[in-house]
Amino acid sequence: MQKRSLKYWLFGAGMIIFTLSSCVSSRKYVDARLHISDLRQDSANLARSLQNSNASLKDCNDTAAALRQNIGNLNNKLNQIIAAAKSQIESQSNQLSSSQQTISQQQEKLAALESILQKQKEAVDHLHKTIADALGKFKSDELTVYDKNGKVYVSMQEKLLFKTASAVVDPQGKSALGILAQVLNANPGISIEVEGHTDSVAIHGKYEDNWALSLARAASVVRILTNDYKVNPQNIIASGHSKYDPVDANSTPDGRARNRRTDIIIEPDLNELYQLINQEQGTAPVDSSKT
Image (cartoon, rainbow, N blue to C red):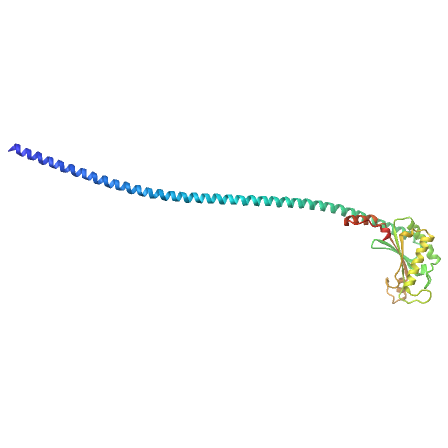
């Protein structure tokens, strides 16, 4: 009886052990299946993530390539801008250098012109003083000496040179012309113009009108200067202005008396000045003694 009970007990224990063993193996299997499922899910997720990463990497690579292209284009444009700027700077530098050279040349020409003008002024001042000193014995209502437009004017009144409506020079006038001729002959480079002037009163007699009288008086003075006192005839010109260049009103006796005059206009040698001007303009030289 006891043996049978032990047998049954052992059998029951075995069954219990077998059942428990089966339960443990089944659970491990289930756990393993779940783990595998998790792994597969993780693998799928990883694959998708990797796919997304590859897509993102391609996008990044495309973006990087586009940026490199843009950088290359910008570098090309920058190089073009730098080259253009350098070219412009070089051009402006050349222009500046040329302008500076031109300014320097102009300054030299200006200095030369100022020097010549100063010489001309000094020559005019010297002529003025020399003539005024030489003719100092004559009264102011007989003649005056003054400067105008870079020239020396010796204005001789009718009362010093001529009788009314006459073109014959009086002895006193001839004496004054002789003194003036000494100064003119001492300055051979000067040019001389003798202008005859009258008042507005019409004349009758030997001369047709005031035009003829003014020109005849100028010619008489020129003949005395060139024939009697040997002033170079190539340097002298005679002209008549009639009543059309008055220095005072013709409405008064004193005004008319001042208008009846002979102006001897003396200009220093301007050849040097004309040559400088002609060089600037690129024209042929001009002889100022014939102008």
